[in-house]
Image 1 (cartoon, rainbow, N blue to C red):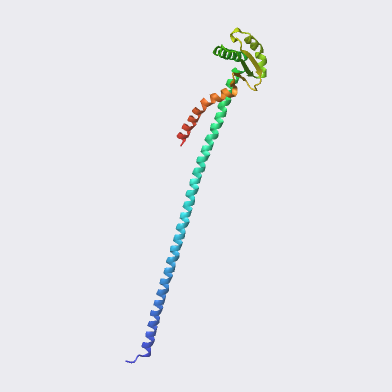
Image 2 (cartoon, rainbow, N blue to C red; image 1 turned 60 degrees about the vertical axis):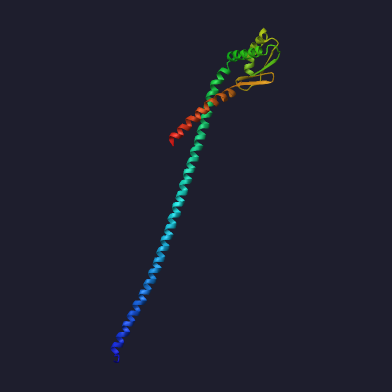
Length: 208
């Protein structure tokens, strides 16, 4: 049966519609693929940005924690140094008073000299005692009186004013013993400092 013009036109229209629908579906599918790719890329970029931000935040937090721990350690060290200096100054002040008293110092030196002589009774020797210039003037008569005591035997005393601070040094047979404000305060501070360190350690442990 011969195709009429009407049927031919209708068929062309239908084929055009089908072709247009197919092209539209292809374009839509392609657009969806491109959109999915863009979305996936955007999601990946967003996740990377978030991961980088978290990594930086973790790094900053770790650094802040480390800086804080170091600052706390430095603070404890400075506190310990300040307290140690304060304790040493208190000890030095307490030691300076008796070591600046000529009666106390004279009695102490007399006992030391006599003990040395008794321990070395069969020998004659010279004992050199160093004090401050002021103390030497105040102990001059004491030294002369002690030098003439029979207990000394042949031992001689040499009293000199060479020290800058209260206390004394004595030298005998090459040995040198120093009893000054600084040496006594240092010795006492060594006994105090371990206890001070223990107090600070316990305080920091409780704080943590």
